[in-house]
Length: 385
Ligand SMILES: Nc1nc2c(ncn2[C@@H]2O[C@H](COP(=O)(O)OP(=O)(O)OP(=O)(O)O)[C@@H](O)[C@H]2O)c(=O)[nH]1
Ligand SMILES: [Mg+2]
Image 1 (cartoon, protein in one colour):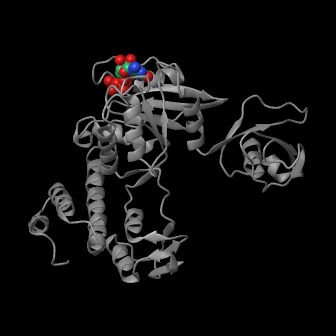
Image 2 (image 1 turned 180 degrees about the vertical axis):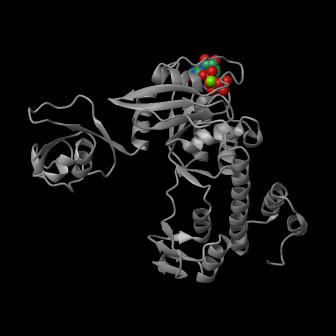
Image 3 (image 1 turned 135 degrees about the horizontal axis):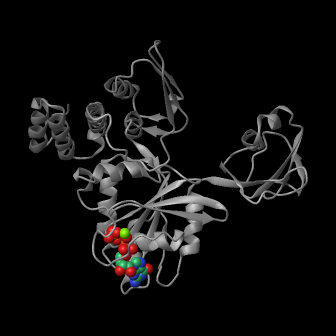
């Protein structure tokens, strides 16, 4: 440990060393981490401590799970092509937006914390059903509140997050509160997962592939792995990865989710100023979709952004009578003709001759392609066997 830590960090460290129970240790370690100044010289120490913290939290979580293995179910069954949660502070217009997008009847009122349970709705985007869930409002300290674990668990389980910021209130406070609660729960938004895969092996020690992409020393890397009790593994770097990124990968609690930032109530006084402030604050971090449900502004654009964030494509099949299906197959971006064939029946793969493509991925209507042809949104595919 570096000796140049400030006195309050040294006190915190001692407290951490003396802690005995798991919750005590976690609290003390969090305190210790918060007291360490953040700069190049402490980067490595911080990442080692954060990994240790993640491990302790994991242990605590597991012990809780064992204690109440029959605890209440917190996740909401997924329906449609994806599940998206709508979060924000109270009165930001979540129920209003849910109603506008899906027709769901959530209670709308100008007093705080109107929505007490998750409210469900289904958005139909050009034939693709997308499940939207309004969650009870986020507030400072949500994580440690009675309802926190349920709300957080639903957010973690979702496919994407819509964050509502009310433009008639201070946008920084809202943003900071939400991000802090997400951070506490290792939910990272709009971040590409670090380009490294760790494959644990039974024996053989540690093997590194693409180590030139790691922006740190091999010793630090090995230390982090040892801290996380990874002794036998193949670690494959595909692109540049920092030490902090790497400690994030070792933290099994971390989840990465796409997020859409929606600025609501654009019709109210002061909203233009707050919008500019928010835009400046989030420059380079996230794009913002400004809306006003009252004036019906921005909702079509928002639906479009929701669809784009999900990274899915719609494929319409054409049968042997040249009938185009009215409902699309929903597939991941990057899917090929093989994925379509697999969805339809194994017979289409076994007896596949070629497919004809009509739509954006075809060079010309009716282009003949093979199983590996990559499809685009709104393609029409006809398979010949
Ligand atoms: N002017 C204006 N008011 C809006 C808009 N959207 C929502 N509101 C008002 O804001 C208030 C709160 O709306 P809700 O939709 O209940 O907000 P919420 O985020 O669901 O609130 P909680 O469930 O209590 O957390 C209501 O009085 C709405 O009429 C809008 O676009 N413009
Ligand atoms: Mg509500």
